Structure formats: C-alpha cells, structure tokens
Length: 404
Image (tube, rainbow, N blue to C red; front, side):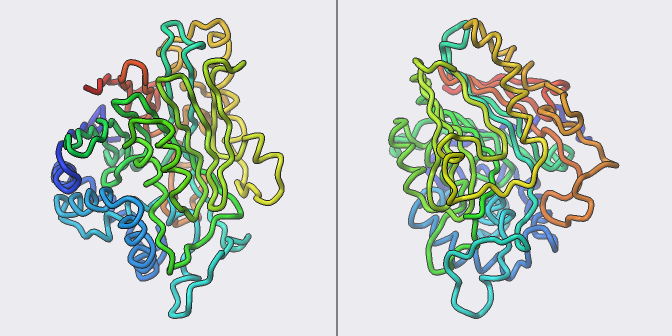
C-alpha cells in the first residue's frame, strides 16, 4: 500500500502546450510508470499494432476534433520525457482495452465496421458507479454528481492517479476545471467553473469495433474533456454527439442549472435518460451495463457485458440515496455514506481488494490482477467544490477543493 494518504494535486496554467508541459513535468515519474505498465506485452496488444492505430487513427482524430487537446498532449509528453505516442496511448487506454486490434493492423486495407464477435470480445474491468443528484433532492438545494471509480488496484499502490486543476489562458475562453484521472491522461471525471460536471462508466456493446484506419477518430476520453471545456450545457452535449468514437461508454453529464443526463454512447448512436428539477425522481444512477429505456426498447444493438457486480451496484447506490432524496433532505455526507455500501463484498459498491481472489488471474490484459475502488469523488456543481478521497470511501481520507 502506498504511504501517501492522498493523490497528488497538480495545478497548471496557460495555453494548451504550456499547461501540458507543466503537468508532465510535475508528474513525470507517475506518467513514466503508467507508460511502462501499459506497454508490457499482453496489456494493450502488440505495440506495432497499437502504434499503427495511434498514428493512423487517434492522432489525426485529435488534430481534427480536438486540436487543443493534441497540443496539450504534446506538452505533457515533452514535460514527462516520453513520446507523444506514449501519451496518446495513455489517453486511449479505455478504447485500446475494449477491442482487439490485430485484425486491422495487417498490411491489408482496413476492414470497415469490424464488429467484435464472441471470440474477440475482451473482458474489461467493471469501472465505476455514478450518480447525478438534483437540487430538489437536497437540503441545501444544490446539484451533485458523484462516483466510485473502480479500477486496477495498482493505481492506488503506485499513486498513479492525480487531481488535475486547470486554469486555461484567458484568450481561450474556457472555464477552469478540476479533473480526477490517471497520470498522463487529460481527464476521466470532473467539473468546471461554469457549473458543469461529468462522470463516466465503462460499457460494452456488439457495436464496438476496431477502427477504420483511414478514418480519423480521437480517443473517447476526448468527449469528456470537450464537454468540460464548455460553459454552456447545450454546446457541451453537441461536442459529445458530434465527435466520432469506435467503442461504447456511458457519460453522466450535469449542470448546476438543475439538469442531468445519462448518455449511453455507442459508435452509432446515443441512448439518453434525462432528469430536471421537475422530474418525479430527482436523481440518476448508473454502473456498467446498458440501462436506459431507449436502449432496452430496441434490438439493433446488444449489451455484451458478461455479468457481475454492475447488476446490483447501481441499485445499492439508489437504495442509499432514495429515502433522504424523497424527503428533500440529502447532504454531501449522505452521498458519501451511500457509496460506502458493502453488499456483495468484496465486489461491492465500495469495492475492496482481495489479492488472493483476483478474478482475472488468467487474463494478462490491462485489468489483470486485483481491482478496488481507487477513488471516491463528489462534485458540488452549485458551489463549485470537490470532495475526494484516495481508495475506498469507507477508509479513505477526504480532501476538499474549490474552483476559483
């Protein structure tokens, strides 16, 4: 177990390349460790295959759809003393782990629309349980979005996660941001100074596919940062909808204006569930399988989640929130307590590592080895504050931050 009770808080300022360089310089060793880990044989596929996807697909996708993110990644690479390919790889870790790329990395023309069949399907970590809680559910009439992030336990023991606070140059007209992410990535969950918040959850569908190497597609993490770089909720939604992707994911987007949305994103379409201040149930929860009514009402796309704790984690979180939410009396402490639930231990909402019972002993992929809740975070979008802890919320030490 790492001796550090909390993750590193990294503060950066300026234009994309400059703030990226500062980020890379401040977290050099953590980034280098993450790069070394994911480049091990069997983690994300052969490097020759991964490298081709990065050069032919992700880099052109970043340059077209998120050029400022591309510049920021260039800065991170320079500051950390690694290659730009390494930083793009870290930012595409989710995408690269969700499909097998050998089939598109031959010297043959790329195969379009290559669906991942049963033999190619990859078992991935069950990442995260998330909630959006609107003002009518809370005592102080504030909006929260919150998450338990479940992932490889090595992120805890190696201090491989950071809190990234970004103050863009005034010329960019981008709000300040607070992000929780793996070192080297540009964001996993977060909130901004305009009162927008975002968390994300892993999903798998039979629409997920290795990318067409002739088509520029950025890593799906770009959708998250593009949303959080906006001051307007509607503009942020357009950024998500209009940016291509080749794997599925769930994105929970919310606003201090008392609106929240669950977006089950697939390569072809987005399934939505929406709540606002007038909704009968003023909160949304989600885990790692498709749940929205529009998805369940169709048959063209199938959920390929292989079963596990996702089937109960969201329900347990809702049970922990429901009573006080119905009484319009939720406070931040109640949300943290709800995330401390241990039903189904150790693979509970608050997941604990059991070293000798790793469920992925035979899998040499990026999620092999024990998993746990690596971070619990509660974003108060109305007050622009963040409460976050390293590791499980039942035993971690919470810190408080404020976006200024």
